[in-house]
Length: 264
Image (cartoon, rainbow, N blue to C red; front, side, top):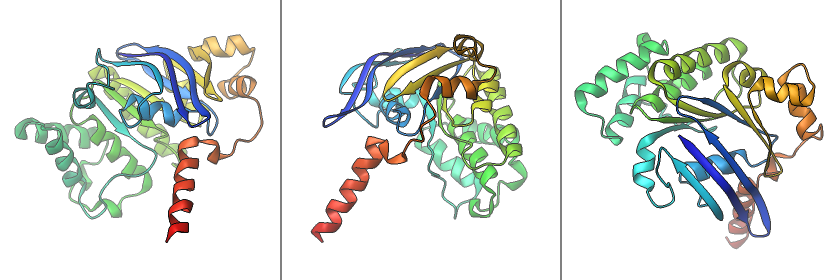
């Protein structure tokens, strides 16, 4: 479903993603893990057509997203780290707009919205403004919306960041249910190793732009001789605290902001 070969992304003299190759099978839940600034988000942005690779190849459901952007975008849903809901609209309205944008037929759209709002336990709040929702409810709505147009692939970039354990557990139960019933391929990033260990069929670990390990959680723990995935992760990536600004995209945004401010 996802095939990445020798993927490279450079920002000037800095190489954020360096010769990365992996495959994700149809219906698989694949966790892409790494420290801050390791290249996770840069990779996702290339997979989802937001960044163009410097070199290498990407294939999504048989399509090349570099040259078949519109067709590729129809095949996946995505939930980024930053919230993207309209707080002044209701849960139903946020879903409805998404369905219209993806050209989901009216009758099917309403049926699908109801199914997903019920599945993610939001049906009773469908008429409420999203700004009145808790953080966990907003996240569940964003992920439900990502499933609305029946994508073949769903990208989740740290979807449970800042949520309490109960909300995290509930959210992953819902995602696993849709993955199993609709055979949706899920590509996720998270800093919660227990989530990846429990949810993912296979894992890839990236560090300093290079893929340092991939396999099932059990295989990675066996390879590192560790008892849990967090210990395995630290064995592979080290214990040094990483600076978030090591992410070249974040650094470039910060530089652009400073540069534009200096010109005012």
